[in-house]
Image (cartoon, rainbow, N blue to C red; front, side, top):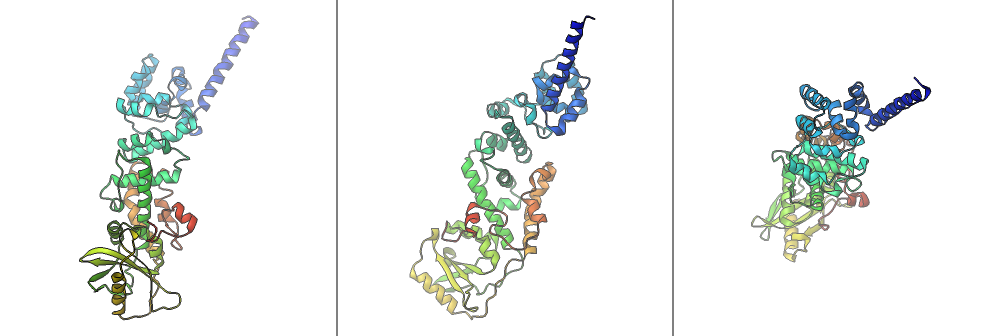
Length: 404
């Protein structure tokens, strides 16, 4: 062989090695070895790294059955159209638009119909890293909740960070899951559940309300507390102690106030809230609080009517008449026992955690919500223990009746 020909062969060999190295390094480190093993003696398969990286990734990571993957390989060797190969694998063709570096996890079963493809095709982010985040979150939405929610979320620009950080996404998914599972404890705490016609902003608002209602589950856990004063009546009005999560949510709905966000105050054990009713219908709410200077006499912290309006003098007169007719005794602060909070919240999250396990998503999603409740010791109940809002972070307190 002439020297010039030898140089050309050597150059071609080096180019092939460089090309293979480029193709393999395009995939994320955890999957490079699998891709390398699959394509070691399979040039046609290696070419997929440029023409259809998603198809190569699926074959390398065990998508479908072994028999189907083997059939797909034979089709590739015979030069069959990649569309046909993808169809045999039940792999949607829109994955051809996804670059190799955007595949973070093995592919779950995906819808292959044209309606789904046409919806997501023009929403694939151009940036590979943004595409990876989008694909990962699309898989989560599909695997945990379903097709309709995944389509709704995939078309929303705020679905991606930084608009929706990871912990906010996890709460959104948990809320949407509760919306679809009417037998779950979380479903009963919804103010409004997810539906395809709902806007993104409204969905985030409803998730925030739901989070604060979950705090009531922990705040009201444990044995029944000393009510301080017995239920009673005066001047034609009835006074009924609010004790359960359902009590506070129902009262909040009836009065259009923030009693469903009262977890922090209730957990401290320093207050009691009574519903003031006429003929069984709420007309006002009265909050009693421990005084710092007198253990036997509670302070009337606030009295509010519907939508936090002021109440007429007769309501104040009735409150004083009701209190004055009862024996006074030393009142004690009874904070929620941390162990009771943990137990109640663990029971609340148990169905959701089981759903995560069944979907193979427990390691991916349980970290910031259910595992936090199940494993972290709670030395004291923080403001909005499970759901931290911007307001609580800034002020260090939960909303009162005056802040609707």
